[in-house]
Image 1 (cartoon, chains in turn cyan, blue):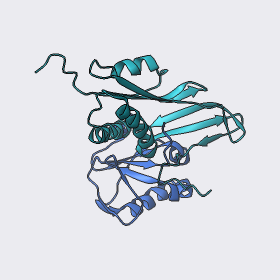
Image 2 (cartoon, rainbow over the protein chains, first blue to last red; image 1 turned 135 degrees about the horizontal axis):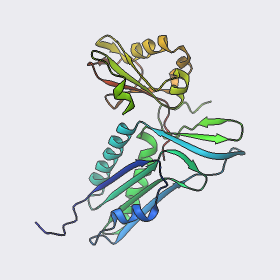
Image 3 (cartoon, rainbow over the protein chains, first blue to last red; image 1 turned 90 degrees about the vertical axis):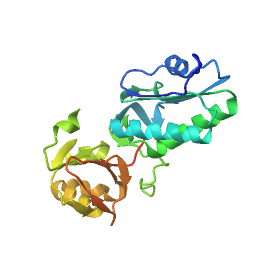
Image 4 (cartoon, each protein chain N blue to C red; image 1 turned 180 degrees about the horizontal axis):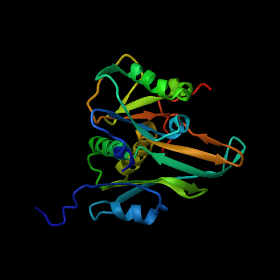
Length: 155
Length: 93
């Protein structure tokens, strides 16, 4: 077996500390890859004319990690050349403009990692048990992803 | 972790998240339920204990042993120690 085979790895982390784009990128960099693609989800300061003070996230942690592992497995089936995948999601309070999620994927050529990153975030929003609460000045709201098939979108 | 400390032998643990935790007023508890029960019957058992949950009936699914289950006629075969979670609409990412 080659010493520097660089076996494909998934890096999944749910944490309350500030996320780092440098850290997540470096996890997936590989000498066999010419591309690293990234998605960063950041918090906006407004929703429907209301000022958002900050976001709060909670998770069914054990199941969320399992669901993200399933997404990684599906990515590797669809894009077999993908090398490493990193998904970091923040929990607890996330201030405005800070990242709530960072996804990074490496592949030898750029098409696969670009497509895989999009698939990861879209599928995360549809299937991973994480919840976001938007805190406004006078009230708050539990958000519902449009991708979530059990959300009641007719309100 | 927290949920595991709730568990007594012969019972299932129920975890509440997001809006369901606010309505129920707690994050986890143990429940004694029949071994064979439909997912809708399970919901009705839980609403008996926490009536305020009734308002979200049309917007929740369960996770049973970490697999999503719709509220309906689907029979569940529950073992002691199984983990059930109330899953309001998700909003990760």
